Amino acid sequence: MAKKEIKTDLWVARQLDDCLIEYDAQGSNVKEIDDVLKSASKRGTGKAGYPEYVFVIQDFVVVIEDKPSLSKHEKLTEAGVISLEQKDIIDYAVNGAYFYAKHIAQNSSFQKVFAVGVSGDEKHHKITPLYVDDRDGYKKLPDVESFTSFTVENIYEYYTRYVLNEKTDIEKTTEEILKDAADLHEYLRTYGSLKDQDKPLVVSGILLALDDRFFKVDDLLGDESTTDGQLIYEAIKRRLKASNVGPDAKRDKLMSEFAIIRTSARLNEIDSRLGKTPLKFYTEFLKKNVFDNIKYHSTSEDFIGRFYGEFMSYSGGDGQSLGIILTPRHICDLFCELLNVSANDVVLDPCCGTAGFLVAAMHHMLEKAGDSPSKRNDIKKKQLHGYELQSNMFAIAATNMILRDDGNSNIKCEDFLRQNPAEVQLKCATVGMMNPPYSQGTKADPSQYELSFVEHLLDSLTKGARAAVIVPQSSMTGKTKDEQAFKENIMKHHTLVGVITCNTDTFYGVGTNPVIAVFTAHEPHPKDKVCKFIDFRDDGYEVRAHIGLVEGDSAKDKRKHLLDVWNGRTEAPSKFCVESEVTFEDEWLHSFYYFNDEIPTDADFEKAIGDYLTFEFSMVMQNREYLFEEDDDEET
Image 1 (cartoon, one colour):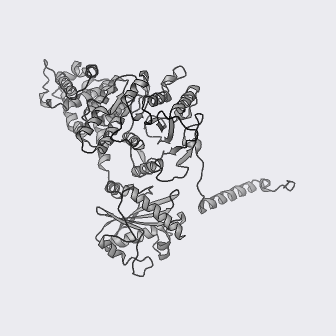
Image 2: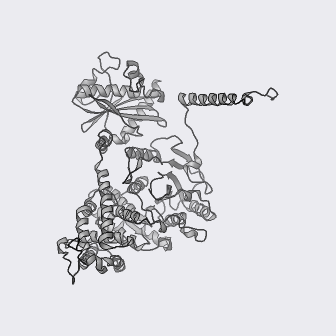
Image 3: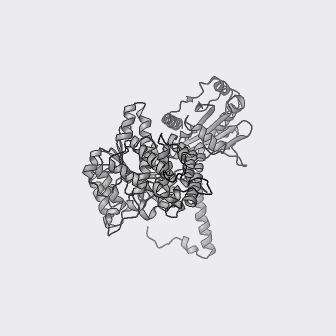
């Protein structure tokens, strides 16, 4: 038993080390806490008693107690509360952690105390946190998979969400963005009579004008000779020139998309209801509610992409007729983490939409680049490449990058499938990210299958490059003859690393069940290669009314667990991850390889026996007892 306890102690310590949490074992380096623990014996002797681990972050104290057996995780009273009976405090992880945390809360100046009970081992375990209050007892919080919520970066957000039940700054910002998008959509319709496809272009154009240092909102006077649209159009042109957007053909293509700002009479006439032109009204709205958020926001949130998605959803056509499904921010960030994007990588997104992947990659790369001006400039100007076929999306993507001081983002308005992979390879892309058009391929035109885009992307990367794509599950099954051929050809030239089944609400409102597939380019798939297939449908993201898909309380913890399993830092039961060799004929999905390796608990066994006895009794009552009689003539 002692050996098992040590193994659990060491596993918990590794988890804390992975999260870069500085902790103390069997005591505390904080004198006040250590003094309190000197009278915290679990046996009630008044002598010293120490939990497995204690750490202090900001003004929070976290106490951890662990047990090697899952059966010794927690003991409740008949009333359903945590037992503080001496034996239960000694024998059970949660009970012991609560005892120590309560002692600290009652006898020290620290009032924000978490108790964490851990049981089991690396593969099968439970981690249950409590928030302990010296007056109100405790608040039981949802189980977690790691200690990432208790890091210096996350603990206050965790406390705000779980303990205070308040919205975080990110949640508040998201709600404000969606409300502003709804309001702006209504204003664009009411005062501008704009078509759905033109709405995001007007927004993007105005944002570019606002980013021009010579442009002043007060100069928009509704003049008939030099219209507001002309002033905004000229500001866009100056902003593109200042960003060195080139060549001329690219700049001209962008300007042609924004021409409606200058040519629309309705936008440039003073509206009696507003006392100004719709363009000035929109510009004032965007300056106040949107521009500052986008321009100075430090995260990888694709704000223009969010607005675009909102506009399209209101129109009842979210781009699905063209297979356009915008990638959520958290998926873009997850790609960067799965591929371990570095400051030296060159990133290619051949179906870049509103540039969400490129924005996320840029933020991750800049974060790792340090303060070197030349390196940061190279990342922005040389290491981000994209293609986008739809001209309006191209304009929005370019705007998205320009507003992040990356006007020369190397995004081209071209059909990626028509590009020669050998020529694209000259970009020396070491990372590929893609969300291709969905459900466009047919037997008559197999080149539009998602797997066709995947193969073309892999062919276009450098040898050894890492690539991640998000595609419908159906792509991984490869039911048609053409899709089977694509899978076979991909494995002949490239390596499948693994596939992650995503939350079915990832593209909320679209009705697509997506997966993330990860590859290594130009390295033929070895027959004995073991791939990882992960069921990550429970990713902690949830749909909330009037908002859509948002980060739930457990999302950070679940993502940390996913990355730990993906990178081999921890094991997981087969219900989460299966490792297997694969062929092109297999379905590249967790559900195809899954087998149940869970060890039944006593409760599972008792339930199974109870179910069987209930079934037998039911059959006997129906005069079918012969089902349970032994055949005397049966040979043995």
